[in-house]
Length: 261
Image 1 (cartoon, rainbow, N blue to C red):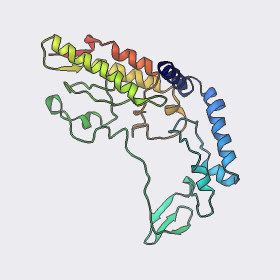
Image 2 (tube, rainbow, N blue to C red):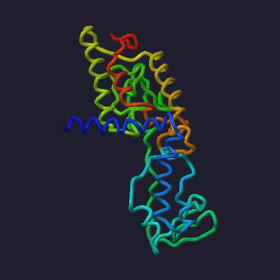
Image 3 (cartoon, rainbow, N blue to C red):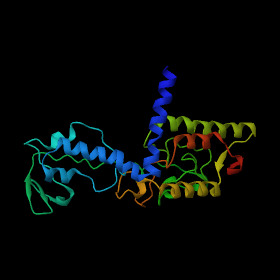
Image 4 (cartoon, one colour):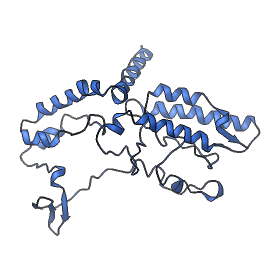
């Protein structure tokens, strides 16, 4: 019964990709309409409702599941300043908004998010010929199967570029990566070799395909700028498809895509 339950949960979550990638109409008619009804139910003030209602397709940014966020905005001791009233400057006593309002504050908390794309690896990684991974990824992070990079032999990155998942468990993807990594190590040992690295052509072909597919997704074309994207505009955090597709790719180890020495 537990296996049947897990199977049901997996395929129920997997079906979300249809909306995220293949049918924005379904995404709007089902998920977005439900979200807008949720806002209308929890917020009676029309101006406040306007401020919190996104101007992009649902799913373009990470969806927050909460029954307490909107009621918090409705409290008498809470004021929501929208992006139209952005901060112009921080003063000695608080902040001044772009529309000229001065707010006296005792405490300012920066909740500006985090770097999940351009800062995938925060420490120096040196490859063949002294290449630095940070320099190779200066335009945007990229890797074959989100795991290996040309000129970086024996380097395997877990949860690397384009391995994030927006609809199911990240553990599923990590376990899939292990298939590829173990196959790569096995290829080295069977060949009595010492190193393995993906070829530049294979990585380029893979990355080109990934971002071509990404253009079909709400994360790339949903009308927002999110932490899913790198500074270059490429969506780096997400995998643009079904998780079982990625699993199949990682199980099909292609020796021709690698250099083994």
